[in-house]
Image 1 (cartoon, rainbow, N blue to C red):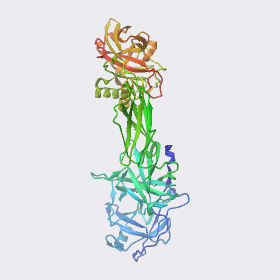
Image 2 (image 1 turned 45 degrees about the vertical axis):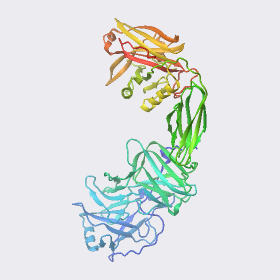
Image 3 (image 1 turned 180 degrees about the horizontal axis):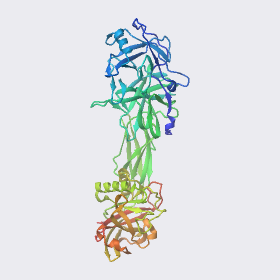
Image 4 (image 1 turned 30 degrees about the horizontal axis):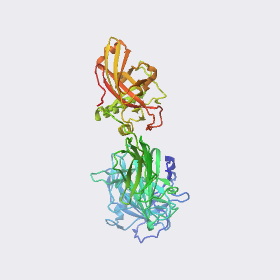
Length: 640
């Protein structure tokens, strides 16, 4: 199925009100005998209460609101009084009258009217009316607020929302109230039959943690602005998804339905999941280009949400079911479609799980494995996609490979080259990440900075045909893949070890006499061939602007610096090879021997091996092994 990726502009905002649309019978309410009314409007002209293209919102006969009188000097609350709409047909503006029967007893009209007409008292009104409503004045926030309990499971009413689920609030100095709408939500419709449940889920960026909170406060300030906050306690109920169950058990195709939620910011995606009576599901997901917000008094719109989407069952569907791999191994992938959670398992130690991307319900979830190089007979293994509904096998067949006779035990050191430009200050962050990774994983990785076009080198290190780079630091791992996050680094190193067994090991001794740097390399090669070797003298620490940075590239010590970071070609015999390098350095460097380091690495052409790497840079070499040590130190090749 084609995954639906839409911009935030696809979330069309439509205004909504606190009152309900549609006719209703007048309940048998007893009003007080005195002629006391208030007037309530669903919305101001600038927030016209419109839900559909041609439909307005109305007060229904019998709608109930809570009316509260505050002592404006002491901010003390009188009793919450229930007022009931007196209109006989739906109306945008309606008159409300106090009911005789209140939750606390019989309405005391004289006491209420005395406070009502006193200029020291303020008036607010809240929809819907609730028994034992919690209402107060927040002096620090200069607003009146009422507590509202948000239902995480809501009832779906065609063309509207369930009465009482979309609270609103009004403030007035007199008897005229214009209701404002602190809450928000999502309007949607379906095309399919037999849809019995809808779930709205959201994903945040790192600025937000809570989507919907059970206990909310809706508030209004004297300037008429509204807000929604939530109450957080040790037992606070929160959720990142809401469900909607339709009246009558099934959604009516083409009818609009509504989720009600608090205004929320920093959303990176919104997913609407639909479920049919037979258990099949589909999901429509909207990824926002920028963080999206549910705004007060508005509904995002996702009409005909199932158009073009694929209904899926709990039974996983994997494609392809059979994968053929060559003897050198490499990267394989398969897609899974499924409406339920599942696991992916295999007992084969020559298959390395590299993770997955995508969503199996809204589209296809792609699982990636690396198949290790095969040095024996042909082999086969199964990857099982499993859940409670079924187990679906994916078979991997690998061709036979050639044995590597007398292959020694070689210790591999992985290399991270940080290719960057001094004008980009982000290099300090990247170096901090690399230092932490090296500390966490011992000598598994060596890294250095290769600066381009800056004052912090004595020779140019550009090699555009080998690595494309820009002003942002490019961390090139093993000469194959770019990335600076730990999971990317570990995956790259796992791929290198699985497919490219180390063919070389490098050691060296070094020293400085006068202004002459000498590096004597010892390079072991498993088999004879053409290899590229690079050797650098580096400063261990150097201040750059406001940052201290380790391993600043200074001198390229191989015979011909024009080869750049790709190194110089050397013909090596099988076994140990000696390479003698000398370099004239500045006298100032020779005075700082304690800060100088040697970094050397060997690169090998891919040849017939698969090229496992991203496609955003060039080159036909990978880093096979490397070493890093202070000047004056001798390190031997690590070969058993």
